[in-house]
Amino acid sequence: MSPEEIKQHRVSLIVSTYNRPDALRVCLDSVKQQTILPYEVIIGDDGSRSETADTIKEISRNFPVPIKHVWHEDNGFRLAMMRNKSVAASSGDYIIEVDGDVFLHPKFIEDHLREAAPGIYVKGGRTNLGKELTEEICRQGVSRRISWLTKGIESKPENALHLKSLAHYLAPRYRKHHSSALGCNMSFFKDDYIKINGYDEFFEGWGGEDVDFGVRMQKMGFGKRYLKFAGIVYHLWHEDKFMYNREKNFAYSSSLDDNKPARCVNGVDKYLK
Image 1 (tube, rainbow, N blue to C red):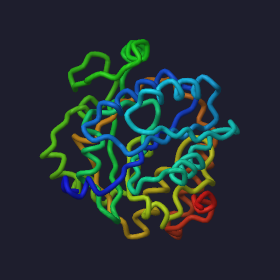
Image 2 (image 1 turned 135 degrees about the horizontal axis):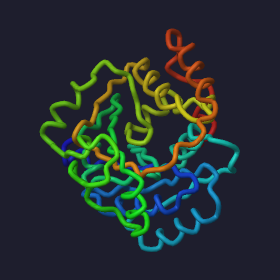
Image 3 (image 1 turned 90 degrees about the vertical axis):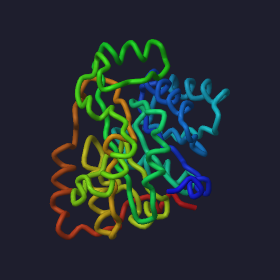
Image 4 (image 1 turned 120 degrees about the vertical axis):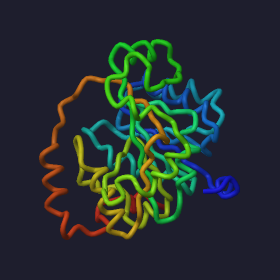
C-alpha cells in the first residue's frame, strides 16, 4: 500500500496468549514503539489465569490504542477457535496476527501494510531467542532492539536483518509457490478471512491450523507475499510442551489436501453478528 492508502485502513492487531503475562507485557511494549500504530489490539486469550487479565488491565490504562481482551474457558489448546473469536471481535478492516510470546521490530506493522492488498495474505518469519536472553528481557518487562549479531539468539539470526528495499523486491517472489502460513506473523484483509470462513476449528492441540489456513487461502485464489528481511518478530524462548493431537491434526490436513474446500465448515461465521 502507498502511504495514502495506509491511512484509509484500520489495523486490528490480534495477539494470541496463554498464561504468559511476562511475555505479553514485552509484546505489548513493542506495539507502542511502532512507526504506525494499530487501530486496536485484540488479546485472544485461550483460557489464561487471572494474572493475564490483571496485566492487560494495568497496561490498558496508559496504552495509546484500545485493547480488547477476548477470553474463553481453558478447555485444551483451542487456538484456531480463539483466533476466529478475535477476528469476529475486531472492528478494523485489516488483520495482523501475532503470538503473545513474540515482540515486534518497530517497523513491523509498516512492513505488513506495505505489502498488503485485497486477495493477498502476507507471511513473515521470526528470530528465535535463547533462554538466557529471554529471561533477561522478561525480567525488564520491555522490548529492545535486536540485531543479527545480538548475543543470545538461538536460531535464525538472519531473520533479524531489516532490509526494506530487498524485502519489497522479494515479497512477491520468495517461495512464491509455497502455500505455507505462519500464525505468529501473518496478515490479511478481514473480508478475505471471512470468505474462507477463517480457521478450521477441527484443529485442537498443537499444529496444522495455520498450514491448513494457507492452503485454503490459495485454493480460494488468493496470493501470498513473503516478508523476508522485514515484518520481523523476535520469539521469546519457552520449553517445548507436549504437542497433543499433532498426528491427528496433520493427518486430517493431509487427507484433505487434494479435495479440501477453500471454505471450511466449522469456522468464524458462527461468531459474526
